Length: 52
Image 1 (cartoon, helix red, strand yellow):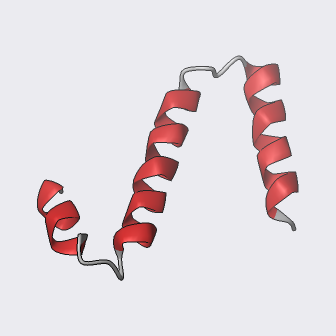
Image 2 (tube, rainbow, N blue to C red; image 1 turned 45 degrees about the vertical axis):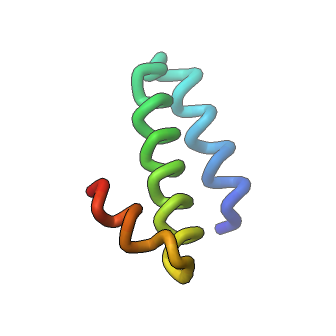
């Protein structure tokens, strides 16, 4: 299953079930995940991990 179809399925779920309150939670989790992956091999990693 491709990532695009997973996103499309999730978007369809939100539209049909009217679960719009899930959108900010998912976006926040994705941003935190991207932040951790990007800074993993950087010199900023100790400072980012101190936030959590």
